[in-house]
Length: 252
Image (cartoon, rainbow, N blue to C red; front, top):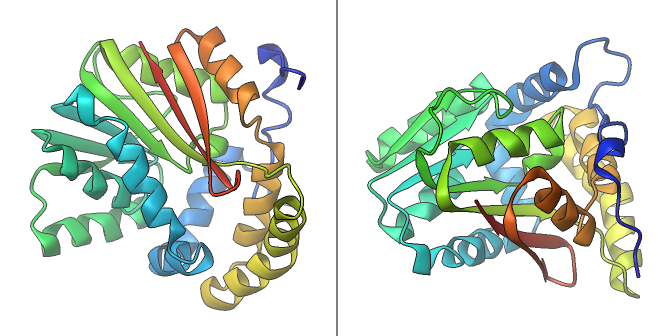
């Protein structure tokens, strides 16, 4: 049985930052990083995952099908791909928030070009959401929780704005633990991905930060335990693609 990470000890390991010589906070560095790589982000996201990230998003959204949410919050929305996928649920509105103005600018252009009027993108911090309590039927986060400066605070903020009975769906990278996927994954993440990312985005730190942040993140049952301690109910974890990523669900 794996050891569960005590909640009070999770802040330190998550304090992995993109630019180690920079004195700025993790939040400021993450925003800077995504502003820098935003022009190439969508391409690299799909290219580096061989398109599997698209299937992961679809699977995550299907987990909300029976809940029929009408107002959805997409935290760390980036350029809005997860928000777009959420339209398959036929909501009245999806509000996407992010701290990166560069990512949001690309996302807003994307929504305008495709005519997705049900999606609103706005700059906001996951740890200080500008919404009243009990507002959203569902909240979704794709590959964003490991970037929270304070994981507990961010999760509590999402819980605050969810309606009673509302559902949280989180997609996040995790660490495969079985041979040979663990070894292949580690080699790709450590040796191949940073080189490709640097070549296309011209930001080497962004794609060394990715494997470092994944390694530091309390994934699997550790994250399930954190969700429960923060106050969520019925927290679950479903590994995807040999454990490369995980789909977490929980309710308020």
